[in-house]
Image (tube, rainbow, N blue to C red; front, side, top):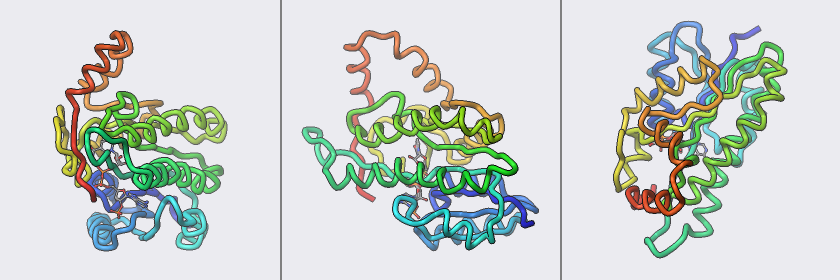
Length: 255
Ligand SMILES: NC(=O)c1ccc[n+]([C@@H]2O[C@H](COP(=O)([O-])OP(=O)(O)OC[C@H]3O[C@@H](n4cnc5c(N)ncnc54)[C@H](OP(=O)(O)O)[C@@H]3O)[C@@H](O)[C@H]2O)c1
């Protein structure tokens, strides 16, 4: 029987590449999923240099058959860890507008459908031995911001999804962690022009995501000041919460 797989979507992105670099070790077998071939190959090179073996899947998580590819490329290997990390951000074209219909659909497809499809595709190969699913949401899913409304809605939905599937999968020894990062330095956050308090490096972000999964945490919010803000924000009056949102006004460049 082949070594169990660690599946990482968005492995071509800033956080995904950092997760790969930190988990790479002899005996680790990755399935790295993304669309950009060059950046996927960069992640592969780093992983192989650390002694890991790598399967590369150039897939659109929202549209392609992830389960079919995993079964074929890995010869039905069991899956031990899944990082449903692929995602994209977009905002309205001006402060007076809402997100366009096209951007709304793109965000829902990649962030929500993509993560749910990833989980659904991996669970059958985790059932026999158990394992850990880590879903990468965002602080924006807990503290939704006007310039990231649809993005925030997709990330809030992922929090709901993770909490909903956890009891059922726990009976199959599959843990589910949902991680809500604040600002992490990556190509995505570099397109975000506005205040980015408590920005952490992709390496720190990846370490926090990995640690949360290893501890089978239900929800992990980082860095600490955002965890504190999430904890106290619900006690503030609505007008103050709405006013506080304006501190985070931003423009998001197109990819
Ligand atoms: N950076 C932050 O401040 C921050 C904060 C909170 C949460 N997050 C979340 O963290 C995750 C990783 O983001 P990042 O900062 O590393 O951004 P990034 O550098 O832009 O990487 C995004 C990754 O998602 C992949 N992706 C997007 N849509 C996809 C699709 N339809 N099919 C397959 N892959 C797709 C990209 O693949 P290709 O490039 O190959 O297309 C890329 O690997 C995202 O879910 C994001 O929402 C980020």
